[in-house]
Each structure stands twice: as structure tokens, then as C-alpha cells.
Amino acid sequence: MGDMPEIDNTSIRNIVILTGAGISAESGLRTFRADDGLWEDHRVEDVATPAAFARDPELVQRFYDMRREQVMAAEPNAAHLALARLDRDWPGDLLIVTQNIDDLHERAGAGRVLHMHGEALSVWCLACDARHAWRDGLIDNPPCPACGGRALRPDIVWFGEMPYRMDEIYGALRGADLFVSIGTSGAVYPAAGFVQAAREFGARALELNLEPSQGSAMFHETRLGPASETVPQWVADLLGD
Picture (tube, rainbow, N blue to C red):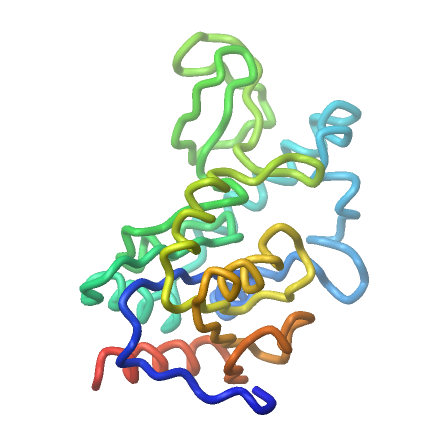
């Protein structure tokens, strides 16, 4: 973008990919930051903060029960499938860091995936600190499979909480030759700062997005279009199709 040269694929060995809501939007999952400031018709402050859960746990549990059902009903799209192919065929280090709480990367076949904001199909017991795969509702306050206590919450990183596995993410960025951002707004930190960190560590940076993000100027190259088109084309280019 701008006067920056395009990225030379021959010099790439280790890759870190950040995916955001834009990659799952084509699977029917709505993006987090809608133009009206609402998420699934709720204010973020009412359903995605620790204070909201303390104030009205029933509302929050019902909201995430609905999200869990939506995730289970969605299917991976061409972008997820292309990244799964890259995960399978890329010989170097690769890490897919997703801001999304869906499991579409995994269902497409990707294995090297890190969920920095938690997972819709996981619950966290506040009594014993255990986490469990979960596909049912929480609205009826079911017991924890480990301790029997009734203190389960969605295993989701809410506003005001620290994203998961940040040391691991920065370790991967430190060793990356290429950082790729797919379907992100560039507005939510700390993920919005990954491109700057990657560049400081010496990586090239590529943005694949429907429109330029808030941090587009930080990328060496930007390709615009639906993720279901731009991601498979990039993967094909990278793998030498």
C-alpha cells in the first residue's frame, strides 16, 4: 500500500495470521461492531462485561446461549477452508490467532489455532477454575462437570478482561516473517497493535479485508474484497498454485 513494495513470498518461512469477524460474516455470523453500536440487538455494555454478568447473569447467559446455537448452525466458508489448507501444507511455523469465538477454523480442518477472546463452545467454572467443552445452554445454571458447583460462565474474554495466551502470541510475532490480518476492523486492542509489533520484529505485513481497516497504513500490502475470495487467492499464490 502506498509506496511500499509488494511482499516477496520467497522470503517467507514463519507466518502469523490474525482473523476477525469479517472472515466469519460470510458464514452468517454477524460482526461485533455494528453501525448502530448494538451486537445482536444488545448494547455491548449489557452483555459483554464482567459488570453486566454480575448485574444480570440471566440476560448474559441467554445471550451467549443464543450465540452458541448460532455458531453450531454456521458452516465454514471458502476463507476458512483455504486457511485450513495452508495449515496442512505450509512447511514453516504458522499460527492462526482468531478474535472470533466460533470454531469454524477448526471445523474447516485447521489445527494451529489460538482463540485470544475465548470460545463459544467452552465454559469456565468460577468455583474450581476448570474449563469444559460445552454445547448446551447455561440459562438453567447447570452444575460444573468437575466440581458440581453452579458457577459456570461463558469462556469468553469480555471487555475489561485480558485476552488469552498473549505471551504465546507475541512469541510467534517475534519469530514471524509475515503477519497477515484478515477481516479485522483494526479498532480493538491489543489485537490492533499486532501489526506494529510484527513490523518492529522485522516481519512484512499483509491486510486482507473488505475495506481498509483503521490501521491500513501500517501494512506493506492491502488486498480488498470478500474474505471468501481474497483468502483462497492469497493461499494459492503462497503455495505456488
